[in-house]
Image (cartoon, rainbow over the protein chains, first blue to last red):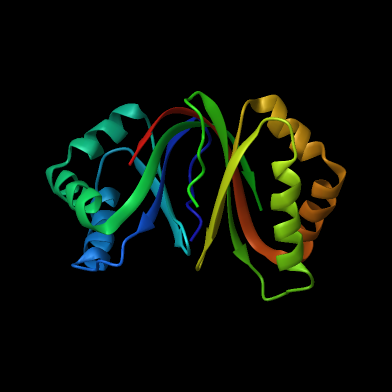
Amino acid sequence: MIANTPKPPYYAVIFSSIRTSVDNGYEETAERMVELAKDQPGFLGVEYARNEVGITVSYWKDLESIKNWKNNVEHSIARKKGRKEWYSSFRLRIAKVEKDYGM
Amino acid sequence: MIANTPKPPYYAVIFSSIRTSVDNGYEETAERMVELAKDQPGFLGVEYARNEVGITVSYWKDLESIKNWKNNVEHSIARKKGRKEWYSSFRLRIAKVEKDYGM
């Protein structure tokens, strides 16, 4: 679903990745990370799609919320596994949403 | 592919959408828009994936480049068709990328 974010400004973390063929718990961890992120202070929503490239955009109240989420222990372990096993390449971008509109 | 963007700051346009079941030239127009965007001044790259939700992130040098692209005539016609036929809902967010890293 499209995230129902509040009025800007807020932050977006755009995580773009190419998967390896290694499974080894990927789906379960991905789902767990979404559930865990939802419980974090400052979490505003998340959107996800994957074809050749996977794009996960999570939305956050401010940079502090993003930093807290980055320091979450379970999330840090998952990221390490991601670098080692699940992703052949990725890029993470932190961006301040200045404007939005929709239908 | 993951867009090979330069060092921040630059801008991201995050377009999240839910499709209707109407085809009517959608794929051709989507492809044409990517080709056309690539020709615009300030275009830095694009990433795209769709499952339940579609996410297109295009990257731009600055707000002026985004505004020019928005005012492109062919793009404006496509957006009108998008609102009327192809999307049941969408959200467009303009965000300033402050930081990025990758592997």
